[in-house]
Image 1 (cartoon, rainbow, N blue to C red):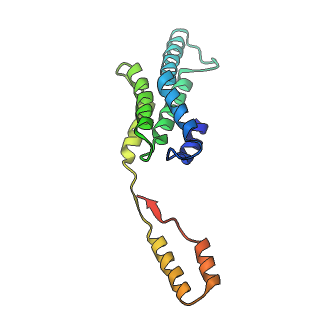
Image 2 (image 1 turned 30 degrees about the vertical axis):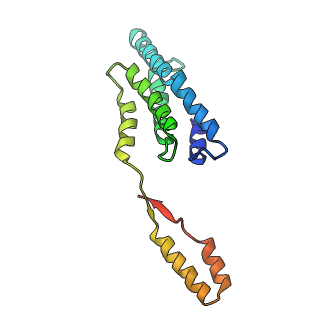
Image 3 (image 1 turned 90 degrees about the vertical axis):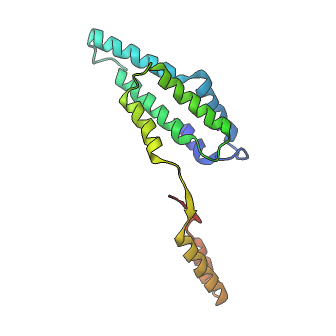
Length: 164
């Protein structure tokens, strides 16, 4: 999970160094459908717990469900709008395999992850007003010939765009 998140932050285009690692990992998640294995583990542990009343097991159905919810969250936040369509398709395949395996009764924690992603809506990047002001201050300092002030302002320059 952490590896996928680390790659996600560095892999928004096919030209970046780790993109093929990211793509291959996501492809394997969709082809192998590890989420289905987690669903089966959840069912098995849940039935064993209800039949035998074991509370001291090494792994519980809640553990399997938590891992599955983490996997779904990680996949959903890893897909980026700038990624190629194949990446999005692999993410959709991996998550939908988990949902389909539940046969209509998807646990609340998994649904929460899906709905939080949907509820967050699309991310829109807009021009950062602070960057516009900083650029104007830099231009003014350049006009006045204050090179040391220009360098200080450039070091403190905010990002050109922000998410909204």
